[in-house]
Length: 415
Image 1: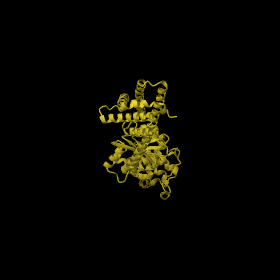
Image 2: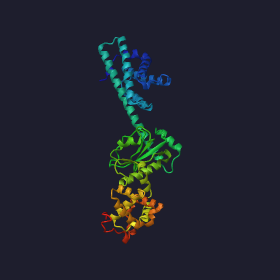
Image 3: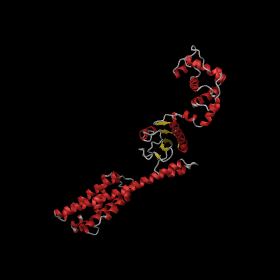
Image 4: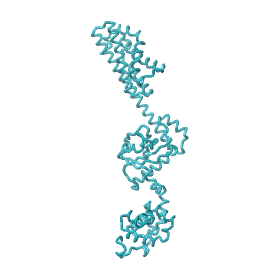
């Protein structure tokens, strides 16, 4: 049943000459009560608001007069208004609050008109039913238009940010002007410095991460990557503040670099993530490349490190694996302790006499090269990289007699 059919047509005739005045009153009420609409110095903006209110009132009066029975015009008009509010940057809650306040202000004028026309209780009830129906249709249509436009806007924004990510990591690097133009279109304030987080998969790569709005995200890349603007500042985009959002995933935070060097941060983060998978770096949670720079440096060119290791650790090549590992461990600790037997023993939690015994073996194997500064550096690099634990078979040779452990218990119980 059409609620407008029971409202007297004379109410429409009475209201129509006063629509402009009512629109001014309703618009003023909305602007006074809703700060987002309060721009009294902007005449064009004020006229736009009044025009929107006038349109709602005109549609209502037309429906009372029988010239606009269908609610289709209301739906179409307020869907467009809802879409326009997204373009103005106003949220749905603000729009709905404005519609409710405007509806109440308009209803007060309707009651005044009903008194002047001396409408009976049945006619006032019909007017109320029609007004609430009209208001419900307006609210629903505006909400639909706003929601549709917002989703479309979000989708477009995501597409622009994906293009921005692709541009940032393009080879050859893009011009600064191209990046700035696309960043503006993607509503991404250009940061001075960035860090890239490489994120490992959990078997649920389609899962969304709850991240601050300023973080650029590409979970389809391999590895998945996040670009954090100005990560060393405080706030929701701070590198450490993102750890809860990454819970359950392994991730490596690349070094903070100028925006123009973003590919370096990604390269280091991806490398760290690979080393996490191999167990070289801690394999769970979020790690920072800045805390593991020496390891990343060692593994930057693994074939080169292996070649260095095979050369400088050749004296250990023929020693049986268990003993070779102990000697390598002792040699590394001795180098790190600046040739201190006591410091080496403390590092390894063994007796100093055991250190002396092992060092005599190592001195027989390496000779005077242990005193050469360049050789010591190369040895530490090789030992840190862990290459001594498994030399290729072609490099092995029988252990020399002098390298074999002594059976004398008076020297050591290390074996």
